[in-house]
Length: 88
Image (tube, rainbow, N blue to C red; front, side, top):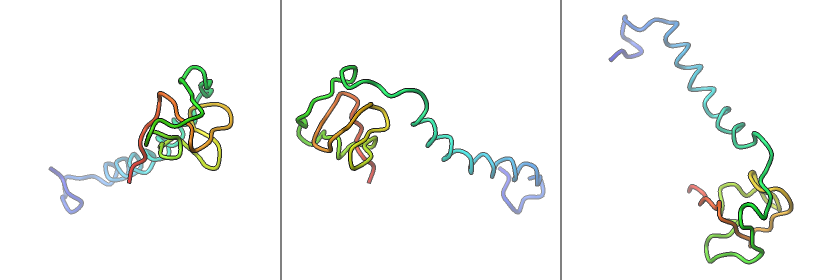
C-alpha cells in the first residue's frame, strides 16, 4: 500500500484522491435536495408524534418548520414513515 512518503505514489494520484475526498460531502449534501419533495400523504404524515420518532428528532428535519424530503410546513412534534434518527 502506498503512503504519502512512498515514492510509488504519484502527485496525480494524490491530487485525484484528495479531490474525490473533498467532493464527497458536497455530493452527499446536494443529493438530499435533488428532486421534488414527497407529499405528506405519501409518507403517512401525522400531526402527533410516535413516541421518540418525532420530526424534531429526525435527520431530515430543518427547524423551525421544514423537512428535506416532505413538502409543506412540518412541526417538530409531527411524524411520518420515513423518519431517520439524528446522528450524535
